[in-house]
Image (cartoon, rainbow, N blue to C red; front, top):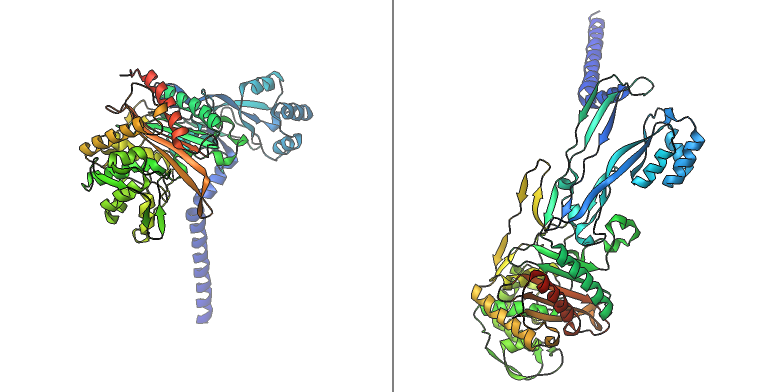
Length: 558
């Protein structure tokens, strides 16, 4: 008898546990989901998009802003003439009728988005058609007043996997969260048929618009750079090219351009390879432009002076390799200043050996090669350096004149900027200040990374670079009356494990006016066909741009 009582008792206990467990599952584990499903039966929620922030140049000229566009939506239950509706909307918005029909035929749909960011002209045509069951809601759309200017540093706005606006590449990608703001919503009651109840309760959450950004970028200098770069590429028959201009005292980017480029308003029409900014995302071997930095490191370490003598009598043997000068000419007894003027590879091997392996490798790291510059652009990358134990004697020798080591153009211009800034290397930045939606402004302060050289060393190397311009192969192109510190570079392009003598990257890096630098600039041209030498292509382009910048900034010739 007792076992029957215990069996019944156990059965009730088991049922009680199952009921408690089920209630726990419904109320705790699935509670929020069920609550949302229940609310969806009597409410509908519509998103109120936030307005994306603008991007402005240093003089308040907009590079990116918003213009009015519209979300076109359908209210299927209010459509009185379906064939006319489908035909008209299909013709104006170029959406197949079958697609539209499927969209408005879904059961229990009282509101169906048809197309986002429709321009004003098409919206007016739809309104003039006077169709029932169609509606419009304002929706901001990205607008570029300067067309494709600064496309590579701006990036573009596309759609994410949920169909929402998202910034990609450049500033749009890096500052996406701050630019996009926070969407709002409106929740309204609906009846059993899904129709909104006009006298029902509604909850409205206003959107928070995105922040706007003021750049260091100077609109006039950017225009000069883009115009001259395109002309230079055509003149010298280069496959592509880039120019970056930075204020060496603040790290602010005054101009940044690459060609070929793309139109951010119509980015889908261009090859995806053009989206990345080669100034921060692509690498190259700097060639002889690196020589000034290596000499600065050796002078700062006290192992050479500008007037230290070197006997340039012929090639230098490094293991099984013979290092020659670029033109196979030798000048006998020359100073380190003349090593830079003549761009002597063998003289650079002498300076590197004086500096020593440990100090040379440390310097390459200190100058920022192998690490990100931390510029506020989404697509920055950095080529990796060899590990300390992987540097061979020949690697150190070739690195002293900029071969066998890869950098980004931005890394190179930042490093050279340290010579122009009393030895201090600055962190490069695009944004100068952020204007928040609440009216407050955040200033982005210039940031010193480290002091690469002493002020005295920077001054000595500046004079050496001035002499390299005045006495070097590119002296014919220099604007008269200006003291410009600079260095040409011609680096062979590695192909399939070896260097191709016919393919080079020509470059020129420098700053001016040398006594009080207002800008440091790097020009690179890939595979120029008119001449492979930087002194005959990149240097003239540098001086051509500098001449217009001097005029714009009101810097007179002396």
